[in-house]
Length: 421
Image 1 (tube, rainbow, N blue to C red):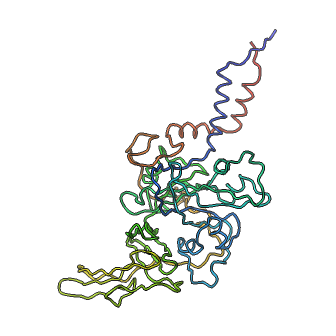
Image 2: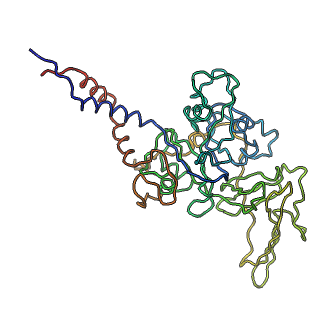
Image 3: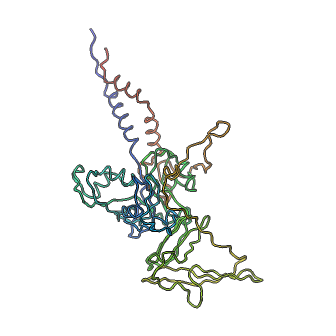
């Protein structure tokens, strides 16, 4: 007679752990920057439009200036009625936000969303805000007891991820983009798209391995031009990503960070109306004007520079210097027309997949290989900390998560079926 032999406790424990680990595999991670002061910085969000939206609607979603959205993406603001231009669904944009220190970590808390019929916390988080926030974060931030009940017109605070890291990356000016990883992304592709290295991304995000998962939020350092305005200026701390613009001084000035340049250049904006004087004292030069004069000892350069927006007044200062050679003309970031369609690059912003060359060999964009400079799973010295960035944990999760579904099903049936004694 056959007797039923119960499965061992270890067998059931293994099965439970296997499913827990596979569930953990889909849990997204986000880089967290601890902070202890009340200062703020300029930061960027990588946002993908969930539907066709006007420029003004996108700006309203994040409570930012529509012009700042356009200039951050080097979109020409001189087009007629540009704020009502309809941007296509799935377009990838950089959204400028202010990053604050709240409850000991960096985050943006200036965005509020008014609920509409059919909204759920999941749809608001995953669709409307493109994965930049989670349903759980919305529930916690707004003390929602029952997430299944949302009143139409209810105002929700939307906590958004951001980082400052002192506005530098490897001691050079930088602004940080909070980027939501897409299924097609690789760390190599992200590094290539944003002109950085795998090593830099791993250090900034305290990663123990190059493994990334769709839904992860990475802090991506972008080369930038920094200002040196005084602390009492309303635009103190202005920093402009390379290849883009910023509007400041009540829309009177346009500051740019030219390609391959780290010098912030400001000049009167095309939108300038009813602005205070932009002329430098004891000079006939206006902000942005530069004169050069060749001499036997080099080149005498005189320029009128912007010094910040103070109490509604444009501060200027005149600089003179003797340089070995006369500077060339100012290089401006190229402007693009307001987008009407989405290309693959703008839809799946950054990660190019390996491509086949003529010989049928897969080629991957070149980048700096990661180096060993810290213990796996621990942030580098003076670096940021990340949630779930342990290299050992990532290796375990990834290896188990690659189990074929049929094998998992077979294991489940085998462990649950009684066995003969």
